[in-house]
Length: 233
Image 1 (tube, one colour):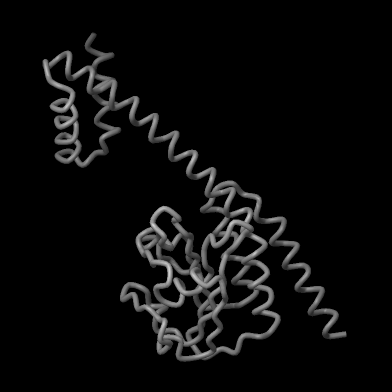
Image 2 (cartoon, rainbow, N blue to C red):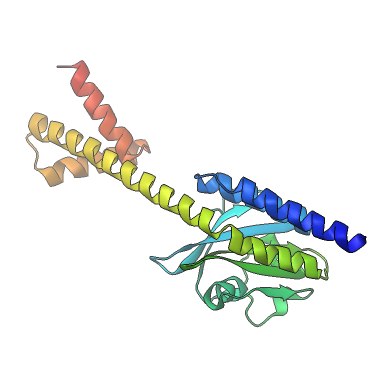
């Protein structure tokens, strides 16, 4: 009877994962994934890294604990640390204690989780290959149950397609934003070239200088130049 209840619970969790991973926004998707992993593991820390295939490095994109200042800043190369090893080998790692003593462990002074005892690391994958890594950590020694290990391993494979789709959307939006910014800057440069008789390079350097002095983005400065042109002409 107990085993039947356990199986039922595991099926409910997997169904929840399937229903929850349709978001096309990578941040929302990973946040929901962290919540589900937390429900399974009751861990003290959950860190989710996503692979940047162009640089062959894993980037911290989501965390159970408040690490907003570290998101997208902590990066690990393939093969580096336990996380990098999991991504490179496409295999999970389960350590119930003394995780920081493992020969593969890489220390980050900015992450308090590096002193935690138990460490379970699962690859996020799809048919194309590795997409990221989920790290589950406990402050004290923790024996991971067979159910916990199997569920997290299954989730790493189940969410692969959704993560891949969300990353494609993110890349598409980034390209669109870059093109829009380029159009705005080009227009602003044209205005400066005409009004101040500058070369294209001189106009751009002037925008850059104003951006640094005012601590505004280049896009913001370009938009101000365009707005001023509309007002005064």
